[in-house]
Image (cartoon, rainbow, N blue to C red; front, side, top):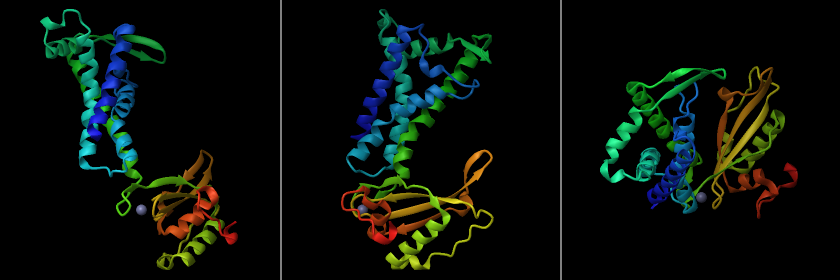
Length: 270
Ligand SMILES: [Zn+2]
């Protein structure tokens, strides 16, 4: 079922791209690259094309599966070939030409224009280069297509409740406040008392950036805390000192405070 929805989004992307090409000068949007080898447009289109799969899984509270990952890549490539197919189908004389010959002919006759800092450097109409570019674009669709499913998978899934976990970035706090909060979490959840003692080393001025990942149903989850330090180039996460702790329902309610119905903020945490 999720694959079916992915095919719907992929077909929509392919159709929209072919209409756009017909309305302009016949240039397919996915051929747009940055620095010649970075297929930006293909990555974005591939991501939109495959988005139907994670949207369906999320809406129906189903876990991500191997099938969903492979299906995503399939949908991305389906959108690529689909764009050519819709162009082919719009040809008045298409019955006299097979789709495969059309595709080969279309790619062969492509022309690439190179720009550098707004100046046109020249054009290249070489079939060999066109096929290399086709492969770069196909790889772009492949990479783009797994972005949406990867976002969903990175949230985690509560097997017990059959629900996708939610990711929630909490407000940054001073490191001192985090240490206090952490002590509070430990007293609330006995199994947390064995948490390793924590030293920030040279990063004494760090702030804590907590992200809560929790099941909306049973409210168990994990809390990831990364120290953030200010540098001359802006904020920087100190991943070497990142810690992740498992939290229970009581701790989740405390961390979320009054933001959710039923969530209570204990007076001591206010
Ligand atoms: Zn749960």
